[in-house]
Every structure is written in structure tokens, then in C-alpha cells.
Length: 86
Length: 467
Image 1 (cartoon, rainbow over the protein chains, first blue to last red):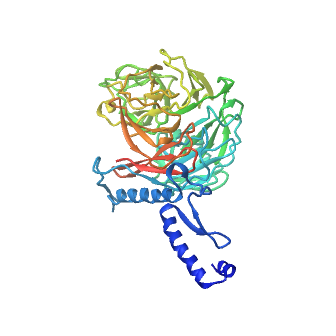
Image 2 (image 1 turned 180 degrees about the horizontal axis):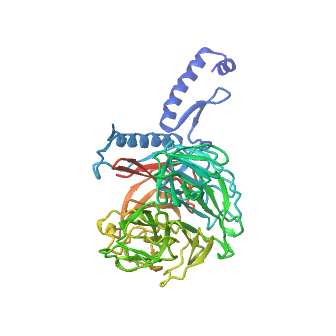
Image 3 (image 1 turned 90 degrees about the horizontal axis):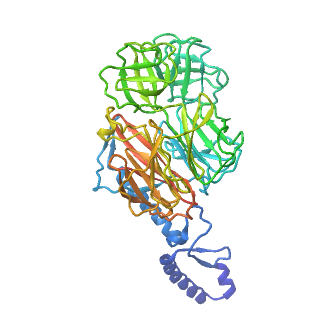
């Protein structure tokens, strides 16, 4: 954000940009994944093809696969809790 | 330690869970070979690379370079067997066996069997062993007498048999020996010059004993029997009989035929058993079956003879198998009529093979009668796909229907096809190869089975507890 402030010069503009960032974050959280790139700009990542673990296209994106991963783990742990070892 | 499993069918739903992912993704014709007697699961990735998974630690590593001949692709297949290195002791005591083996790793927990000489027929668990040349193995429980140079042993440490496709060469069929951490060639003489399309290697080992009995004597140089038995004639043909104690202990022979109460063996006994001889009937450690290559012809390898035989079944296979074919040795059915030794439907007798190529045709090879049948079953309107896998466990064949993640379950005792759970994870492109395997947890009488599956065109590994 410092780089953006220097480029545009004004505090009010920076606050506006920050507000835009908040909105972008809300939108991104419903769509995918938000991050800053190497230039300090906000980026929304809808699908990360660099991931080695999934075929994202069919399942709808990076985050959905990881949610699914956790849900599967949770389901298995619930079953494991029904096996008592003493 | 006690394990109490309170899970119940219907109340609890099967659930796939992610395991640590493979170091490489699956590609066409990659498969997993495993044995219920060995914790290691083998995942060949090409002519020079085999990954190995250990379910106990949920971890992966690589075997030494297999340097396979041939072409990794259509027809490539493999399997696992129980037997490891064998030889004669060079010295010993009641608790130690000095070998001429070069053992690079600790083999504690594996079993060994004495096959001849003092203590023949005895089995022990390896407590420890020295590393390097002329390894000295210490067992957990003393033998009745001291081991001598006349004592022959076999380590039950397992092998991975790797058969490659393409133009067959001297190094197209190799085995990895777990105990010595080495690769060794096996013969391909007698096989077609090239091997492709799809293939399956089926190992029938002595993991499970189907009959344990004491002979009532009166045996000849080629027979052993027990009066009062009421076996089906020739139901035990091509199984092996092993004398585990008493006169003649340690001897193993292939059964060539049987009457109601007597087994005839293929080679004369060195020591004729008598009424002290306790014997078991079990899977034949000597045989490996090979099928595929878009042909109904099947081949059988003899480990002791190191030769292939082209089988000439009395009834041939009804149709040639193709891509997506399966082959599973059936040896774990728990239905009462499969455990009754007086009935023909014995565990260890059959290889079930779906024909593949988008059909749902099932062919069954009867090892005892050397014949094929294509039994009618309650087939659903489903094609057995070329991407997925099958696993035989607990009386069922579990079938992964390609990259959709949907599964079927074939009930062997009732001959019915049923739906079974689903892997919801989104897989990659469909590829040929049986990437399903199993591993079981044991605690006393409690057994919990897990199915494992490597997804198509990905490196994800999942497991599912069978409820």
C-alpha cells in the first residue's frame, strides 16, 4: 500500500483504496482467494494451477478443494472416534 | 491392548480420508501391488522408478532403480508374494540361524520357516538380525533343537514381482526382494514376444491355510490323507500341501489330485508322512498367473522350475480381456459354505476377472479344475472402466468405477453386484491401471480393513475404513 500512496499522493485517496480493498476482500472470500502480488496490488485468485494436488477445474477452484479435504478428514475422524483402543 | 469397534452399518457411513500424497502422480498403466502379508505397497512409475508406501507410517519412499527392460505401458503389471530368500544355514543354535545372506536392514517382525533338516516345519518371528554379509538371524522363541547346516530356511519377507509390457527381454520380468533390497531377473521364455493392451499378474501364496489336519497314516510315497474327510474330488488340485509337524515336517508338495480323504502329490515325498504328520492345505507359493495381452490365453510361472507354462484349460475363457480388465485371487470369503472344506466353493480356488473394455462380463478361472466359466450374476447396467481398480477383501470385490469416484461392491458369496460409497474428490483424466489396494488393522480378534486408492492422473492417496 505504501507504493500506491506514493504514486497517488493523497491520504484520502489511500483511504478510498483501502475501502476498495475491503470490498475486494469480501468479494474474493466468496469467490476464491485474495493476495497481494509482488507490486503490492490486490489480486483475486480464482484457481491456482500451481497446486500439485487437485484437478481444480471440475471442482470449482482452489479453496473448494481444500474445504473438501478438511471435510473428508473431519468425517473420517468422527468415525475413528467410535473405535476405542485401550 | 483391546480394540472395540462400535461402528455399525447404515448408522455410520463410509468416509474416504486423505493420506499423505504420492511423490509422483499416476499416469497410464501405473498400478499398486500389495500383499496382505507385507505392509509395503509398491507403486511403479516407469522402467526406472518404483515408489513404495508404508501404511503404518503413512509415508513414501523409492525402491532402488529396477532397470526394467521392455516398455512401461500397456500390459505392465505386478504382484506380491510371501516368500523371500531361501537357503541352508551355515551354523546355528536353538535361537539363531547363521545365513550366507547379505541383509542390509533389520527384518524384525517378519516370519521365517524351516523347510528341511532339524526343526523342519517350524515357523518363528524374527527378533533381530545382524547387518551385512553372513547375517545371523535371531528368532523370538527357541527351536526344539539346535539349527545345523542341514536346516533349510525360507524368509517370509516378501517380493514384489514386476512384469513390463512391450517387447519382452531378459529384464522384462523382475522381482524386488525386500530382505536383500535387490532386483533380480526372472525368465520370460515361453511367453509371447510382445505383451500389451492390459495385463494382470496373480500370486497365490500360503498366507491362509484352508485345511489343517493330522494324517491317519497309511500314506504312500505320493499320498497323504485323513480318514473321515469328505472332500470333493479334485477340489484341492494345484493347491499345495505342507507338513508342519510330525514325520516329514517341512515338506511342501503341489497337489495333483484328491479323493474324498486322500491327497496325491506331484512329486514323491522325501520322507513318507505317517499318523504323526500334521499338514495344511494352502495357496501354492510356487505359482504366479499372468493374463491379458488382449487374449484369453493364460500363463503360469513356476518359481521352483523358473519356467512359464501356457495353460490349456478344459474350458477356455469366453472372451478376451482388454483395457480395464481385473484379476483378483479370492481367498477371504467368510460365508459358511465357503469355509466348509466338503464343498467346492473354497477360498483359494478361484481368480475372478472382469473382462474390461467397457463391458461388465465376469470370467472366473477355477485353479483346481483348470477351466474358465462366465457365471451369470446380478450384473448392473455398469461398465467396468479402465481407470480405477479392484480389491478383494472380506468376501467382496471392491470396484472403483473410473475417475467418477463411484464404487461398486461385488458380493462373492451371493454373486451380486451392489453399490458402494463414493470418493467425492475430483479426479483427473481417466487412465488405465489398478490403483486400489488394502491394508488391515489387527488387534487380537478385532480386524478393521481399509481400502486405499490413488486418484487418476493425480498423486492423491485416499483411504476408507470398511464398516
